Image (cartoon, rainbow, N blue to C red; front, side):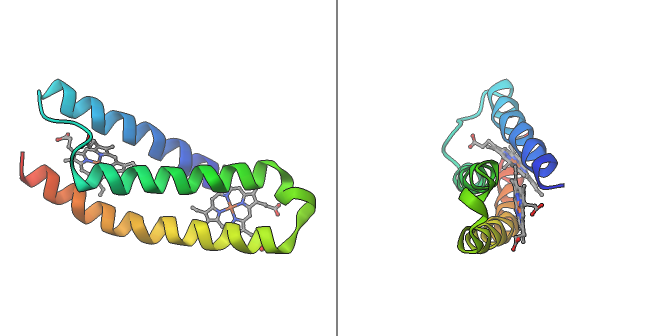
Length: 90
Ligand code: HEM
Ligand code: HEM
């Protein structure tokens, strides 16, 4: 499921920026942009970790993967609040 979530978020990220471009608004400036970028970076780290097969199936890397993923999901909650604020300010 996580790779699908990752893909969905990457499309949403691109769509969010394009939506602002179409509306003639400033891009890459909102706090919502920064939390979105951090989440995508964290999920990219997780994707790379898993793609390497956790480098010889090391349990430490599996644990890091679980924490990085959980952190990303926690930031997404905050990200939703910031998205709502951004929407209401336009
Ligand atoms: C939403 C954030 C994510 C969370 C919370 C998460 C959590 C986890 C957890 C808890 C495990 C099991 C670790 C263990 O063996 O102890 C796992 C395994 C795995 N994750 Fe993630 N993950 C996330 C994102 C991703 C992403 C973005 C990818 C790839 C694009 C990915 C690919 C995998 C793979 C391939 C495994 C190994 C499955 C297996 O052992 O067969 N994960 N993940
Ligand atoms: C409940 C969740 C979310 C809400 C309420 C929300 C809301 C918004 C709104 C209102 C905009 C301005 C564009 C427009 O008016 O159409 C926007 C832009 C954006 N969204 Fe979201 N969004 C959410 C989730 C996400 C997710 C999951 C991502 C991907 C990680 C994302 C990434 C972005 C980005 C990158 C922008 C452009 C910001 C900028 O360039 O300053 N958003 N979002």
